[in-house]
Length: 629
Image (cartoon, rainbow, N blue to C red; front, side, top):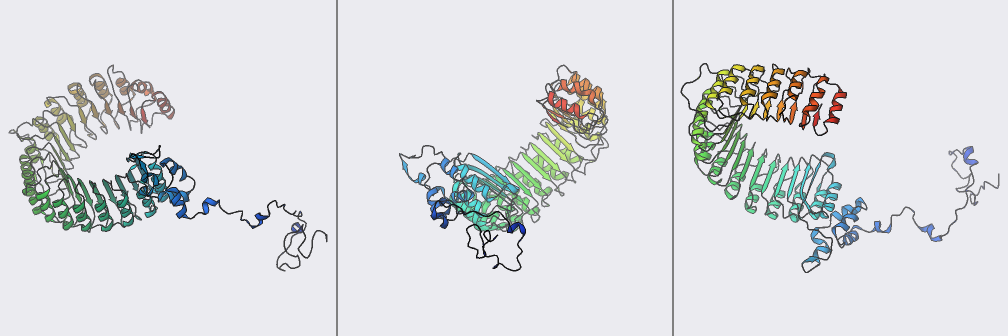
């Protein structure tokens, strides 16, 4: 025992201090006392006593400045990309090497890079990061990796609170080819990031900023100053962006073609008027939820000679005077498409002025414009002599008389007319006698207008005998009588028919549709027509030889109807929806397989009578068809 334990603590077989010198509060277990003796470690290299085993390799202890100088002298983008894979530290240092500081970009012989594998940075690549995947490290990896594969051209970052200035510094340094940048809901990105982008990415053409609260006029002014090729700018819900930004864009971006601004409280008339009066090639303008007045629309009417597409939404402070001035100025000489939503300044008077002032207008959309009545609608359609498409939604002062006056205009070139949720429409008591047929209308949509009935539908059939497309979604007041009258008066064959949720239609009218228009019908939607059954499918199989898309969801069809449909010798059906058809069962398996020879889409969702084993068999046998179950 004395030979194993020396109280002095200096024996070669025992490590530690003297037993007696230990703290009295420390307990020594029997296991510790009789522990296996330690042997002296052999030391081959006496200098290793003074070395630190945990020390990093020598290259890792180099300061960032030295690594920076080494990395910028590497030849070839592939080499730099491989080096960045060594560690996160190397990646972040490498990503801060500006493209202009690379030695391979400075030394050239005969206008060719000395590096044989160096590629052109033309910006072919597109990258998108969203949510948790969007971090500074990923941006740095994209920046370094993209330079070796043709260059980054488009970058989108959405919904991330982890991306900071560091990540965009990497993009700016390594991606001079960047042309399109989109930032949505990135709260930590501020002016510093845009300034860095503007310093290096001079080819930037499109900038989309949404919900970026830290971006102010400083960042956008820097983009405008250093990116003269900017042709598209979108600003949405950026509360610190104001008039100075638009004024800087007006001064420095002569190629701006598209501007979209939404919900920016600091942008007012001063910024909008400066931009509109200075941009000579501006073609697309979208203004929504802004604190602007009649002045902005008056300036637009005078100087918007190049504008072709205009959308105005929720401009609460713009009155009838503003819209009247915009049309009466007659400066919108190139305007072809106009959409106005929730603007109380649109009245009968201002709408007529727009019709007279916008002479080449082809598409007009009005939604929630509650002060437009039949008089204004008819006056507008007479004034806009080149109008081809008209969409009205939730314009509740429009009645059946406005529809009659619009469609019976002899000089009209209207090809498409759409009514949605217009509650002012009521069914006529008697059909009018004095009206003229529309020779141009090809597409008619009447959706969810609860007052629209059979008399109106029969009148529409006589007014529009040249229809190709018909959409009557949600008209629960029409039945077989009204639709049959329309089908008889159509002189040319219908190609697309949508009767979704027309709950009072039966097999009789579908059979008539198949017989009269089966030679031209390509798309038929009977979703929610609860009275439609097997007789309709039999008529479709017999007459609709060119039908490609059929939807009979939530109808009364059974296995017998599916069998009739599959027996059609010349059927070339590509999409079939049986969703919610509870009477279709496993017995339809063979019929579905026969139809599957041409199907590319089959919807069996809600078909509870079809077992999972049958569906699995269909998935295997119809391997070319996308099956929803």
